[in-house]
Length: 434
Image 1 (cartoon, rainbow, N blue to C red):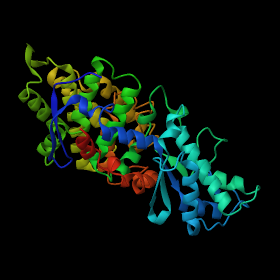
Image 2: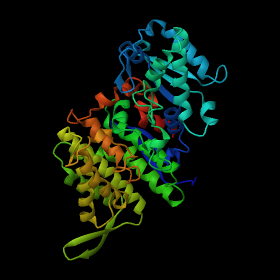
Image 3: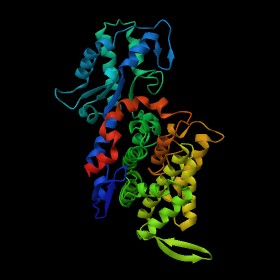
Image 4: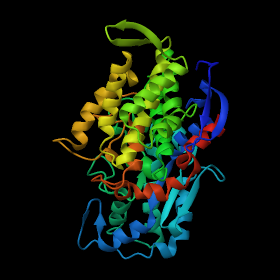
């Protein structure tokens, strides 16, 4: 990748300086070790709801339904240690490799980190979930001498309705990543993580959640070939300023407008900051209208992305509602274009995304709240990594107005992945990694 001389300062979610003079390449997902760890663990880590498997088998709850007569009353939690040991023995490739099993909630929840070798020697990340689901199934069958007629019931609790469905619907062995067949194009895997999952992994912290979403989105942009050559700098700048609170810009904008501000006043604050930092300057006049010019459209785009995030936090934070995020994405950028005569975030693609997003999330269609969308969704995929982080921030600030709350869809991810530092405090970890 290109080497950059320009630097940024990285600030925490509470506005404290973490690292100054960081060259742009040091935050790249191809370079930063903390980002590398996030991506690695996202692919390698599988959640096993061991307590849930015991409860589901007891009442015959398999896949998405119940099958009467297929109940199995197995003391799984009483035999937890033996089952965990069997899973680890089967999953690891060599003794002492990077296989690891973390236990939460008294062992009811497991996080299984599959050894790197299994993924290196596979064509896709499927190798993680399939090996863990198979090992969990066999461990339970073996521990309790389950006969040939009931082993399929254990398998259904672990694997869900697969292979009757394309994915593992209703499975109690789960991954942050969905199956490759559900990715709507090349390189979309890391962008196919629901907003609510990210909200819960970061403990409803708006800036940390936005940072995690931004990191995964940016890694996805790199994976799909949209950050090559001159586009690399554009992507890294947007990621730095919007996702990692570079130069404390998002924090400063929110602080200046948090008490009495509106979406419109955030536009004013951003334009003032851009003029002050000499990113834009007054250009020609057209009647009463003052046009602005920029010699660095990529840096201007990053400022606009940071402004979009700040406007989202100010507006959705004031109302404690996530639903306003699509309108904020649209009208902050519409106002910004009218104020400056310059292109808005992602050169208009955020506005385009917001129009469809409003319709699909809560208009006359109203299929679901913002929290169940992701960067792979047909409605929200178009903006290059700068829309979904705002949706995460909005959902983190929501006070229960969504039909599908993060707690109802994604609590498991708070109780497991949310206990790992790179997932729950990404800003700090990436700054250290830089």
